[in-house]
Amino acid sequence: MSHMGYRCLMAVDRDHVLRSAAALLTRKSTATMDEVARAAGISRATLHRQFAGRDALVRALEALGIEECEAALDATRLDEGTAQEALRRLVKELERVAGLLAFLYTENQLFEGEGQNEGWARLDARMAALFRRGQEDGEFRIDLSPAWLTEALYGLMASGAWAVTEGRVAAKDFHYMIVELLLGGALRRE
Amino acid sequence: MSHMGYRCLMAVDRDHVLRSAAALLTRKSTATMDEVARAAGISRATLHRQFAGRDALVRALEALGIEECEAALDATRLDEGTAQEALRRLVKELERVAGLLAFLYTENQLFEGEGQNEGWARLDARMAALFRRGQEDGEFRIDLSPAWLTEALYGLMASGAWAVTEGRVAAKDFHYMIVELLLGGALRRE
DNA sequence: TCCTGATGAGACAAGTATGTCTCACATGGG
DNA sequence: CCCATGTGAGACATACTTGTCTCATCAGGA
Image 1 (cartoon, helix red, strand yellow):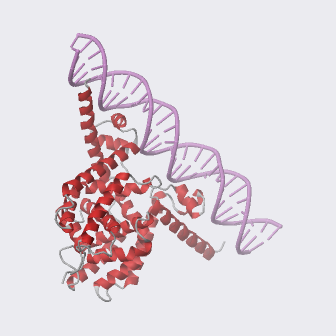
Image 2 (cartoon, rainbow over the protein chains, first blue to last red):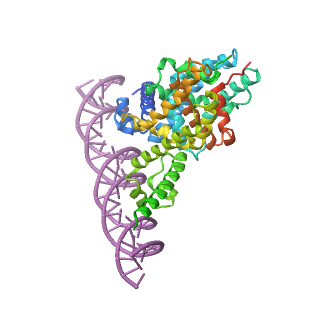
Image 3 (spheres, chains in turn red, orange, cyan, brown):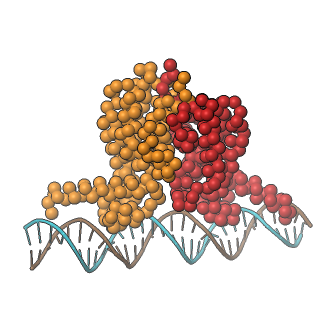
């Protein structure tokens, strides 16, 4: 076996497995390793060969989620334009990972006592920085803390993702609903 | 044993157990029956005597959550005053059950395929009716559906409850943060 | 063709939660 | 005092998931 071929093969499979697992666990967070394996079209043995255990799988999913979020943040160019425009772009970029984010958001409740992954802290900081910029530029109100606005963004994305999967709202409205509510709230502007 | 005495004793214990379980499962959603029992100060055997199994316990918690939400809705007098005032009162009433609500909100993801409890549908309808009234009275914007606003309210309350338990925001700000974000959004009013 | 290595199927042991059961104990009423 | 009822402790079987292992198979490269 060639070394390159080996690295390539593993990388491709690993990514495919990871995305299948993300898609499944987004819908059913208690899926077993066997279900995850079947969803990825592989056997449980192979799944265990790639991920030492369920923990390792979830950690890998966490890393994937962080990675995708960081990529979304990078692609958004948070510093360009107004904070409001940047936030709109950000939610658009994050829409793809909303389901995975919703899974990890609730799953992280279980990791209490280990201290949260530093990746999340970095993401939180970048998002909070966006909200803080908006406040300093006079765009956003200053009586809602950047930390809360960040938390609310996560919460609304999770709610939106679930509402879509359960058919309570249309998928095409996802971005609009979240951005409009987060930015403007429910009240009519005069 | 007297019939009244029996009924009273069971009712009191059951309620106490239920509230202990709610408090525990709010923090650790995967707590075992044994942990739930110990948290309530009873043995696992007694817990099983009162609730046939874990399913029955969660169902009972669901019923409790629904009951408390309905009570909150009743106490709020949704029809009095402006929709905005009613919403502020509602969030205040719901604050007590936010933790339980957060637990059930995520737990319900697992009950898919059984059709959701009719109690939730009733609650959703009442909340959506409030948002609809706000829209019809010209208070709330009409481009965000009542269903989405209801969902967002759940999501924000869950986010707020978790953020508080993890110390990311202060408990005293809970009501203000949720109501202000839901009503006014992040943007400054001119 | 032969050989290497990954895979799938399945067996297997271990751990854990669950649900049921029995038994001893305590409390409270008759 | 005696008895009934609820309770706690713990044993027990069961089911489920997990993690590891073996073995047969199969595809790709030398």
